[in-house]
Image 1: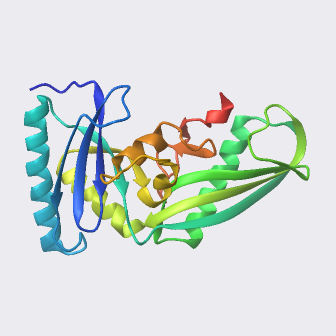
Image 2 (image 1 turned 45 degrees about the vertical axis):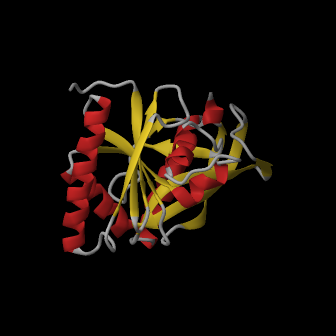
Length: 236
């Protein structure tokens, strides 16, 4: 087997089940999938070890079927801890030209303020619902306009931080690099008529830019929110 492949792996995690899906490059339907039941929950140390062994076993099985190694993947999580929190941040400048760097800095400030208040939550998704610029409301980023005052209405889609740490630890033990974490309860809103019992189809839609109001950071952890690795769809 080799380490190369032309596609992506997605994992769907519920309280009782883990799904693994492989999507060939350029396709929105998975090429291959498997799933297995998990006992109780990840918070129990004994259960965690059992789930870890089950995950390793099923990863090896899928690798054998596909003929290459699974090194990284995106994770979609269905959890009762899902919640949406609206957060506003504003700033006043000397007259300035609106650009991407100003928005990036404001959002980084909002993330830092959020984590000072909400230490038990993990931000999975960031949406900009409104730009209020000199009292005028915009749904999408207005490029290169002159302004003095800006307010961003930001929506944070959150999951329990302890759960996220457990999931990251689980995949780290299996030597799988976690590329993105997606909240299924958020992502399923963009399914349209598609069915998604694996939780993976909706996750792929989200990472393909289904919501034009969503932005992407490399890491939205409490420690160090990084600069964008994928800038707003509407900046293009």
